[in-house]
Length: 76
Image 1 (cartoon, rainbow, N blue to C red):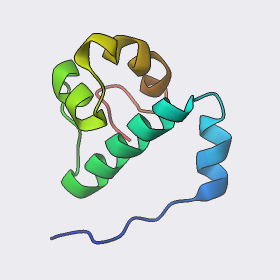
Image 2: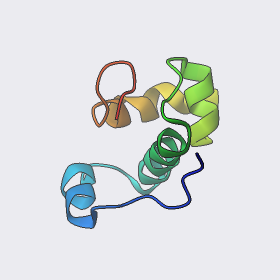
Image 3: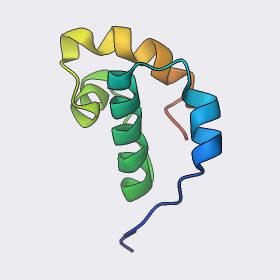
């Protein structure tokens, strides 16, 4: 089943992501959009970087702040 829309609880999102930079917001949104559309994220760092459209060499610094918004195994 295709999901054509996704609920976004703006107050919750802003409360949880105030520490993110603009680029981290973009990466996080791309990850949650992929999660919503596909039901899961891969537990593979290069694949996550690709989904988030972050250069794999920079992924580690981005993932530090974003990882805390997911449960272990990149569950959202």
